[in-house]
Image (cartoon, rainbow, N blue to C red):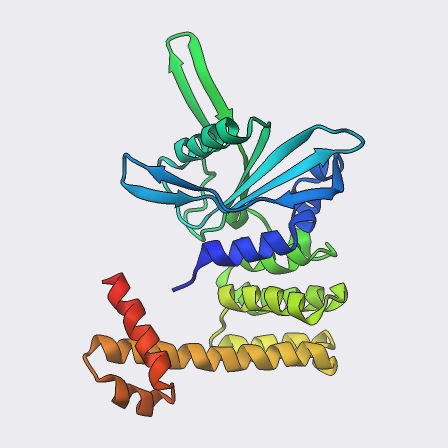
Length: 283
């Protein structure tokens, strides 16, 4: 299973100012970039549902040439949820109570379906009395065209193109374009790996798509760049690993013992046991 929240949190916390530049340039232009402070993760107890809720990312920033600070709260939502706007308001209210600072709320809707526009406000009214009008910025990736980001020299664009509105036949081309954009950014190896891992997680190609992808990167001349081909090789290795893990999970569901699964798949006993524990948690 994909840990969407972790992937998006790693991406945004590493490239936070790039995220602001790409999607919220009006905010980026007003802040002191040296003042950005990522705050510890906030955990709230929801007594109604009996669950603990964790917000994804909270940053404290300062206006340019001012002592005034405000918070930017960014939440990734990987599935559609009827009462999500209400939950965002609850986060807002609790953060405002705790920090007593203005809050700029942002949501990234990262699911593939549905593609209808998601609500981005929560209202409470009584007749003609407007008690509450809470709004947040909504970035709905499946309603954005990846083609609009091809010329953006931005690592967040290189990553999030993989989650935008992509038809099935465009998948290999988009993955190649993500790689081409990544090649222009000249990031350090750790940051390149973060972006490439993000893209490969969300654009895992089948054998036919891989052939189209290889042709595309060859046309772009990317197959002549050593660091890019290292990424492609790592994608191939990780893809083979994922395939072995999927086979192991299916065999675990059928009741095959761990030792035999290890022999069949080539995974270590420890790896199979970890998959077994994950399967037990799901059940």
